[in-house]
Length: 633
Image 1 (cartoon, rainbow, N blue to C red):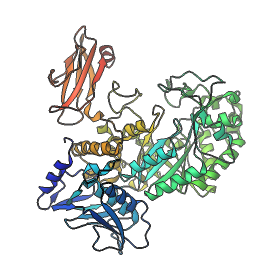
Image 2 (cartoon, helix red, strand yellow):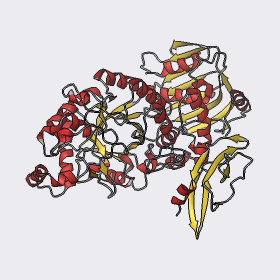
Image 3 (tube, rainbow, N blue to C red):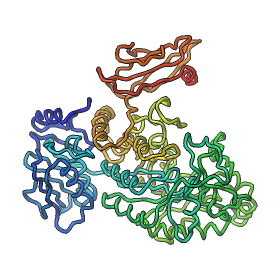
């Protein structure tokens, strides 16, 4: 669908006839359970009244409506109770059993708008859906005085498929300010996410103030500043300034928790142990049982793991807390005491992923622990660590969650996990009655490249939007009763700014949002692709950065004899692709791609561009022939 102006929206809505299923001109993400288009449109008056329930905490709901509508120059006034208001927010006196705690009904007639829900969260989600019915200019960060807003008359019934709908932001690799995190939370809330997974500690930085352990932020929150491709940097010199980083105070965390709560989002903190702990060890070397740990520094992006032999990695330096060191458990008790006080959410995520074994295997303290506790394998050593950590977490009134490695060696029945190494670990855990959040790399790792490497920061793996949209958080074979939900994870080794974090999240975050909210039978890739293009207009108005990789074809190469054939596969319908091998920039007057291209014998590079009709819509892709030949299968 081409980008729509307000005029086109108005014409499309005015032409809607009698009751009918949702039409292409209505783009809602995530797709509701039921949408029926009625006759006519609702035109917002210049003086808007919003009816709100008596004595109900609506969080940010009324403020959201007021801010968006008032941005057009209209006046907005709150009216206690419901009746003749332009927009009515109604809490059901008798619960509508279809809706649960987060569902809503939305009725838009030519006379008024009514959102009904059992709980305030449902009203918030209903308002988000109503805003999506309005033209994209409603999202504008600049005042748009004089814009008359209208929405199609519809009847919507909607409620979530799953209770855990999450996004994870890694703030350890690169620190993001409180205001930047708030913006990320705001953008999540547009699409009915309700879980913000806060990855607060790793090798590259400890981001949470622990008052009883001040060195964690005095030392562990800062490192040498390096810019470029992460994991290729030279190690910092001992005297190199450690001025890059930051951390969140207790006051910062309380502010973020309250901000998220007003948008009906929970924050789950992650303290990643026993691996990924170099920042903690640089702060308190006694937490390691490896000689020379007192010389360790917070990692700046230099290689510290050898992955050439697969998982677990071979550590070049020991980034693990020592499971045989009693000081570690005292340290963790202090950390978890303060984490539990700051975050009201029932779970604390404790990581548990990618802990290397090679230093533990050779360590006499670990060997003595194995003999004492009758542990036969290193995974059992980590399981011993996790069990002790879980007792600490439980003692603070919280429940433990970790990455799926905590399954290895056995975990307690009360521990929950996030399945990231594919779906199978989550399926197995659900069958053994452990609660699971599905977050498999092949669908939900949004740090991966979303287009061709010629247009993206080079990462070791790719994840196109169409693949993300295939995410089914309740995979075949799983015990659905124990699937809490699903989420996407944004690791930030190569994400230096919030603008790039937005680019990596959107539009793949739209695909995950629909996958965890909408009924499976409502998912339709072609329809979703059209909706995504419509939402690009909203992102433009809101000045949210997003990836246009949906317009860039996938590039594959096959070798037949001495010939190399290049296949270009568009991700969405309606694209025309033009190419050149003569080093010039192609446009729509160049040869149109129709079949695999044979690379000319002496060509140096291939250039590719995508069009929709006469409109250039893709990015200019330039790929050296030497690189193309390396892709050959």
